[in-house]
Each structure stands twice: as structure tokens, then as C-alpha cells.
Image 1 (tube, rainbow over the protein chains, first blue to last red):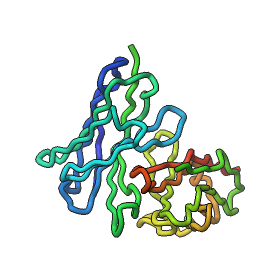
Image 2 (spheres, one colour):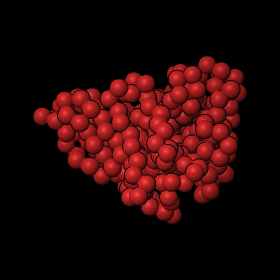
Image 3 (cartoon, rainbow over the protein chains, first blue to last red):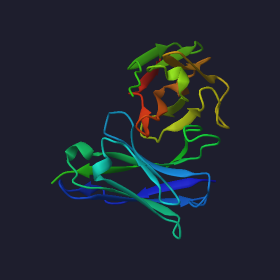
Length: 124
Length: 107
């Protein structure tokens, strides 16, 4: 059974870098069929996709965040990571990691497994 | 690419709820739908326009044509009260886009 768990600091100071880890169990992150993504949700607002990574290291990013986002993967630990630099209070959100397992084309299948989310607050 | 959802939809128990997701020629894209209850992570309820993941009741269905995709929930129950989000892949800029979300209220 797939499980994803986000971990990282709950409080980050403005201008610093937000760093989160997603620990994956129940599936190999090296699965040739899966992509691994980060999505965030500011308090009381909607969902925003941040970016996704394939086990090979190839990535897609939200154009609005691309210059500040780094997504990486450690297949030996079955984990993937998010770094968001130069944060501001506008980056305060619940951050989710999720699995995308497209069945026939990249845009198919949706995100079928999500972590519980972790709240990150940006404040001095 | 912009996806437009109504902020809220209200329906009485046992009735049918229809939640729309508007986008330019969205019928040419593949649409996914998520349900999110307060304090919980989103759950995929419809993928690839009209398919249901295992464990999702048949009461949930989807359609997609022209400029509108629709999530239909038949025989609505109190437990269906949640926020619902549509999602597509914008191939022109290589990124996933979510609609703004619709709060379903069961009267």
C-alpha cells in the first residue's frame, strides 16, 4: 500500500530556503511508470502544483515558481525533495507530496496518492 | 491555461450535484477531479475525464466536452460535502493546472 510522508521544518524565515522531504513506502521511487510531485495549498486557498520529478532526475516545474524551485530524488533512500529559495510569507502553505502514475500518456491518470501534508509557515 | 470553477454549489441530500470546470477547448484535454475534506489531503475521485479509481462510488462520474468539464455526483450524501478541484495538464507550458475549487454544501 502506497504511503507518502512529508517532513521538514514547520517554520522558515523570510529570504531563507524551505526544504522538505517526501518519504515513500509501498512503492519504489525508481518505478519506471511513476512521477513524484509537490503541490501546495495556502491557508483557505486552492491547490497549486509546484513541480514533479522522474526517478531519472528529469523534472517539470510550475513556470511561476521555476526560478526558486529545486526538486531532487534519492532512489537509494526512496525519497524525493523540495527546495524553495527566497521564501516570503506568500509561500506559507500546506505542502503535499504525491505520486503520478500515468497509464498511457503523461497527462493521464492524475495524482492517485498523496501524503497528509505539512504546514510550512514563513515568518520572522 | 485557466480553469474556472464556481466557488460553491449547494444541493439537497439525494439530489444530483453538478460541478463545472471551464477552460478554452478543455474537451481536448484530459481532466481529473479531486475531493478534499477539511483538514485532509485531496483524493482523486475521477481521472481521465470519466474513470473512477477503485473504492470511489459509482455515484461519482465525469464528462468533458467543448469548453466545459463536469463532475456529477448522484444521490448526494452528507459525506460528499467537500471542496472539489479539477486539474489538467497544460502542454503549452508543461505544467499541471488546478481549478480554483468548488465547495459542495449538502443542505
